Length: 376
Image (cartoon, helix red, strand yellow):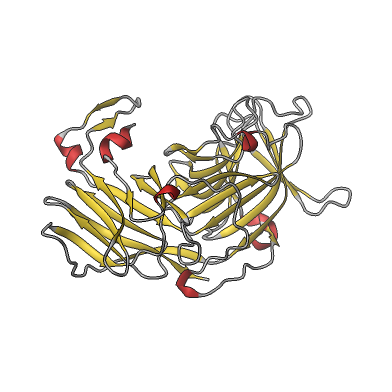
């Protein structure tokens, strides 16, 4: 609610308007991304603890007990086991950050005394970082509660639930209590997608495009979680780079800022103040999508309660991120519009946008950046 009040979002598409809120029922597995125009073949999967040796991982947060067990009875790979009880969440953290990758791992919650793992909780941190002696960032949930949101995406110590499985019954039913459950996590540029036991669960677009990987043991009286035979494929990185302002035509309205968008870009990010409109334009300068912004009207205090924004808070910049994927080859490819990291709307574009501009009598733009593939 807060974001909607603050942003006063209006989205309009020149064509394919019906696709605006269209959800992906299945992954388009045949689609390969093309940052900077080159078709990229993903490398073969590698055992995670071969590529990132287990001895180099470190414990952050609560004093969870992790051990790496060898394959048992002809198993295909080692099993990482994490155990509590601990007072606060504990994480086994990768020795370096990762950019674009695909992780596949079997996950099971449960102990000898609680074989179904009821009332336990865990997760796999992706694109995360250390904060205040713990780990913050995106988490793919392992949730055995009656809510059944395993495979959903949560922001640990941040924005909280980003992609819950509310009203997604097939995804809710995918995770099996007390059994091995295969997790597939794909992070490619701005897009994050998850599957549990082959069932698509969550898709989320985000401006965070790299970070550490971590396995969580949740704080509390009891938690035991096993991660069996994890494999990983890494395929380069994306990075935000500065955009350069350029001249833009307008119909008498003040253009606060504009820039050409690189053909390899998969998103733009702007810090804005004032009241105005962001427009994405096609090659002919015709508007493909537009959305309005205004100073935040309310904020939340430390208890999460809303209150009117002060003059200083109204003047503070808001971050707009417009993120997309595969537009160059898949008409109507999906994306999202985020305000300060919160999803404001889905986005479908009929083609790759060629220009972005900000219009408004008192609008101002700072730190304009575009998201491109930085290495492969």
